[in-house]
Length: 257
Image (cartoon, rainbow, N blue to C red; front, side, top):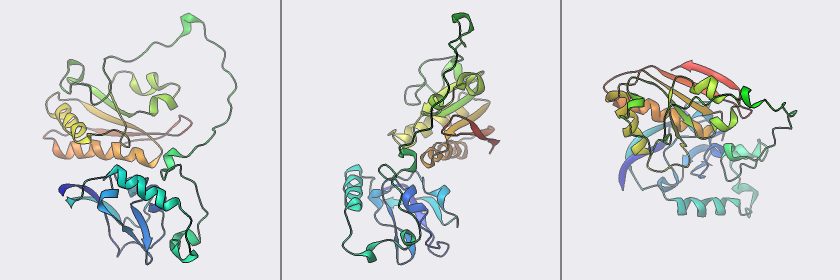
């Protein structure tokens, strides 16, 4: 047992809609007796991907004594969930009025889809190639020194790993004039280190602004919460911008938060 972040569900607010169930990639939430419940502490990674899917604002992230997150237990839980049920009564109430959806292991962001063919662009001449806007190396958040010269007083972009691949003009639209750190809130381990590094960037490197670029999938919201947590813990306060990118690479939301 250790004090860590974990999901809390307010059953008084919960209406049993079940929207949070497919949003949880680990299958940690089930509808039981008409209410969403966290079935086991060790199935919850504490990222809160389910937060944005609750229309009743019944889900929050708290810190309390809880079992450590167990990936082996998650795998067994997901395998169990895919087995045929012996009775129709085993289905969650929400599933009775919602179509079945395959989520590629539980996460909507992992769902396989084809975005459609695009007309081939004319190959630009070598002289017309866009220059890189990258101003430093390395870029992965585990590897960057948080007080490196390129972070001192800088405008910083914290980007989810998928964003540069989705955006055709990532360098010009988001990276120009910013120092970069990339991370994945779903797959990366050691996110307590990420939090410490962001706090150090704010307080010691004294960065000027922080922009967080994420994809529109639920798992990316963890990166926004990480930045917000860093601001709450830091002594200095800097402007925080959210940039949300669609699966087709379009900026669909951009605002200061």
